[in-house]
Image (cartoon, rainbow, N blue to C red; front, side, top):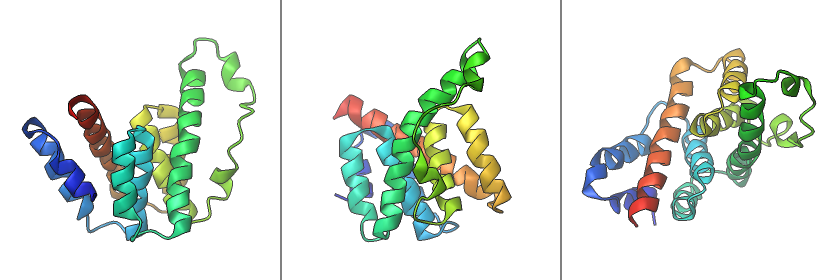
Length: 173
């Protein structure tokens, strides 16, 4: 099932979300790798299996195997990092922020695709997961790579749309 078909199953009260999915799928200012990588990373980031299946079907013909794996890897490593780094940021005791994380995250250094694209996927999942420390870290790398604020904003927008799709579908399906 395509992502648009999946969104069409949402109830009428979520018409705006359905329209936003259509806009996301036709966003002209992103390369296919960025657009479909964001969709796949964010779908995996929601953890909603029916949405993941629709995103996988939508993205399969648009992404190389390397880009698809990088999107999945961004969601996986952010599922871990966003919890840990949000903890170190929110904890009253600053000692935790000084301790080594001792978390394996080699994929960040060698994602198998353009580093900026991987960072964009990671930023979007971090936005979905509410980790300000991770958002700031990924945004800094993206800005240093010359990625515009508009592209970064698209990442956050895609995360918001796909989180809404997953939430509504889980509550109403």
